[in-house]
Length: 447
Image 1 (cartoon, rainbow, N blue to C red):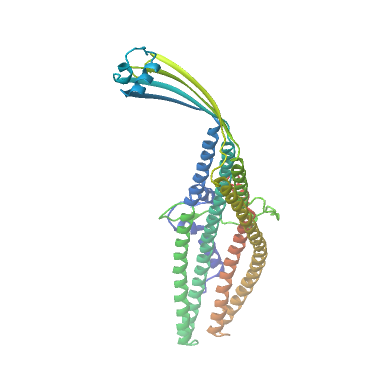
Image 2 (tube, one colour; image 1 turned 90 degrees about the horizontal axis):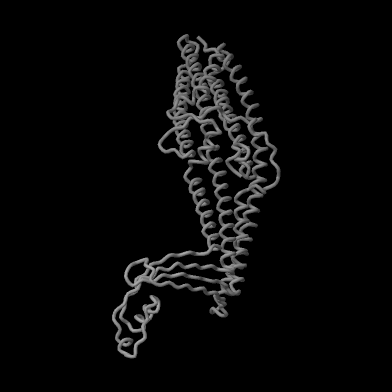
């Protein structure tokens, strides 16, 4: 009995619907997949923590603008003549004597000094430019972290499409197996009725065996694709199934020609600005530094934090290093060379990004035409296979002719699946090269 094509179509439809449930693990839709990739992928996490560390480094540099307030408690115990007299003076216990022995051979004395110290840099270019540099470094790290999020999300998107393609491939190899089984049944029936050759029956068996082998391969490919998707979202040793398939209607945003939103280029721009600040900092090192400090102290000869005597000190000053052995000029030249190097690196990266964006646009148009061609070829192969199947069933053609058109149909199915996947991937790649992948597919998580 001939297997109705309606049953084959229905079987394929259910394979596609039930494929996500065939493997173990959770099921993720595209948005959740991208969100997990951004949050859980280790290299995206590393970039995020690096950005966080850079921001704290900027806060640390900013703290140099504020004064330093320090509390210390020290014990000073000595019988040194000068030190002993110094302790007596600080404790306000000095007694004059006409006997030099009192000063030359004094008894041992001890002093508990409690001191509160205040220190402030009034003018220091190193502090100002140091903070500005750290702030720009933090900006660069944040932009680099955003680019890492874009890349992690795109890799997850690619893995999602791979699972989607593997599911579609499994569906068509199952359909091909059913068709091979039907061809084998017809060849066996014709051989049993004496109108077919045993050689044809053996060729049909080979066709069916290869179809079953392709089914097993497709199932294994699906398992591997799901494991790859699990890795892309930061999961290890698991399989992740996908939810609704990605359709081209998802990419409705008009993509302009600008590369202004590419985070990697903006990160390099921030690095260039940081190096320019470093050059200014090295040039400002020729200026003097103005600062002040003050302290308030208690002294006691018996107990810590005692207050037998007290004193205070205020001091201000200017430090101007007139010659440092050419260190400042060497650092200035080094900063200038680094600035030129980063400028060249930025121009090179920009040129490459422009080329990648233009290629992505061309590949997208190419993928769209390839899909149209694959759909037309698939329709033609289906019709040829239907006609040849009817002719073979009626004894009007050889099995070899049917096997040939069956082979063309299998190839056309595969080409259609691959072409659709490449079109979706080309859409995603164009968004990535423009720097707006997350902005379009997962608003609020990038850019």
